[in-house]
Image (cartoon, rainbow, N blue to C red):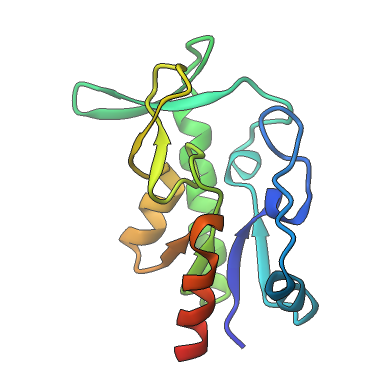
Length: 155
C-alpha cells in the first residue's frame, strides 16, 4: 500500500508554533492510520525548533528566500533541516504523496502568509513543499484532500 507523508498537526499532535494542533477528523485518514500508511512529520520540529515557538513567515530578500520570526530571528537553517528530513522520509518509504498543512511556511501548498506578519495570504508554497515537489512528490493540503484520495484510487 502507498505510504503518505502527513503533517503531524493533522493527527492532533500539539506541534503548531502556538502549541496547538490542526486535528483533521476524516474517515479516510482514520483508515490510513489503521492501515499504517501514514508517515508523520512536523518539518519545523524535525529541523530543531521547539513548541511553542515564535511565528515565522517566508520573506524574499533580494533573490534569497529567508524564513524569519516575528522578532526578526532568521530560522532559515532550521526550516532547511526540516525540509531535508521530510525528503529523507519520503525517499526511505518510497513516498509519492504528501498531505501537508496549508498556509504554513513549511507545508503550505498553494498559499502562505506574505512575510509581513499582517495575516495576509499570498499565492505560494512552503519550503518543505517546494523541496518535495522538486523531487517529484505530489503535495496536497486539507483543502484538497479529496483530490488526493481520488488520485490514490486511480494509482
